[in-house]
Length: 409
Image (cartoon, rainbow, N blue to C red; front, top):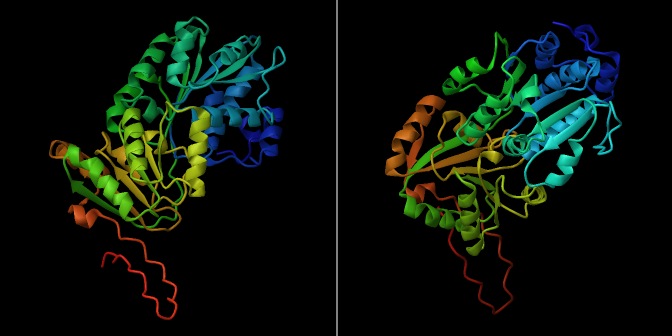
């Protein structure tokens, strides 16, 4: 392995910009992926978040554009707008740009993020750039532009699928399959993912051609124990249980994972009516709304996020004490990503899965696939301890002390 970007054959300008961004030495994923990408190989890379994987494909893809004698596109498909914006920032950093410049010079590389919930007309204007482009797009917005004839996917011969396990999950599968069908059959495809579920292996084999396989084992993270349990409860009782759960301890910082955006809105509204500081988080919210919600949760103004799997990874959500699955998730990998939101920094975490009788086979599949054995709790056992009562001030002479509510013993 090479121990410098220069030794891997990157252009001096890219090496300089990488150094200015603090990337002085390549990470293991960069050491393995950059030479393979420069050699125009397909790549299957399994690497966790935080290993430098975005720069691992951004640097070689930019080099191919800079060395090309004609204007070409690099297409990067990502599942969420947050990841699209984050990826665009990394590409700009690798080009020595400090901010998005909508007035790109002709012939320069344009970094264009395409995602829903933003001004489509402005994005369409950016697509008029006369020169090489990096198109970083979420599936729905990409298909919107492709079906409108504003992007020619048949011309995209360099494609990156980032968080590929999510792109081909049930949430995005139809859109991702439609995108693949519009791409040229002869292309360079880089597939980056945190996990590779068994159900996805056949799809990946069809996507890639003799790929270079790269697997990066993450450095052990300091994690506290996560108490994992399940509560057998019927669907009609789940919302009422959660209302009592959070009213009992209103200092509990938690994420409740649900399947759909509509469920997130409805459950968050129900909890707010019960005076629980809750808010929904899902892909139909505007970028401004999502950013404000995450900021409020980080600041402690919101204590309960009711979220789709958009919150399972890719967002910095500190000090989560409890994760609750409103239903058992469809895949063991999704379960592990969700509960990984708690127990960070050595702190003890708690994960509870609500499971109806009809959902018990799915819960068993999670136990087998994730190699866990969930403790089955009663409703009372699943309830959180009440927060410690504040010490009451000593009453004045002749005044009776105020009554206190007993906490759970």
